[in-house]
Length: 276
Image (cartoon, rainbow, N blue to C red; front, top):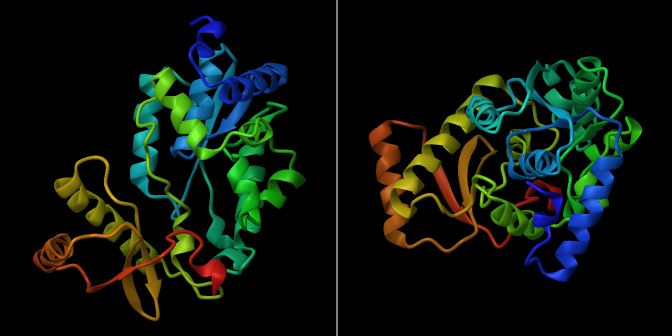
């Protein structure tokens, strides 16, 4: 695809961001690396970089804190799009700040993860999918990215989440409406020990509810989180759900013989523990 076709029929503010992002990526020494979780932001960055003919490889960290389903999805997506993907195992629970879920856990996790990724490549530049809105929220991990000189081209080009979705749709990015999948460690209160069996149960429950909600709503399901509070698994949702939907989910839980779950509607879904 000729680069110029990226700019046709885009609103002027988005055209300017596209040109800026193109300039940033083209100026990196090539090939470079892109840390890709399998989520929307890093996939979009990789998809865009390929569209403008950059030379790069994807690097994906795995570990107990990563749902294996995300790795499976990324493997299939990268193969379909003919992108080079390197899987890098990372043990973040070897860090006491992570295993005890300190408030600055994200800093230590990012620092350890990106140091590990950097050891697996000779590229002088590694990018991530941080976008402009991430820089205005509580993100201790951003300090680690700065210390390690990890580049965040979407943030540098002032891309917001809606910009990513809008341009992803125009360019033909698969699953451009993909829901956010924050780190699984955000499901636990700060300063609480993260036990492996509970973490795995959170993963099981999130996968279970996603499948059940797809049966009801199709692919565009309401956003939700499973959190572990005071010994109880909680289903947190923001969008108003009819009683019959909640009853259907409760019945499915009982039939599947999965641990009891408390249902709770919140005014704001993300950043739950950051306000506590």
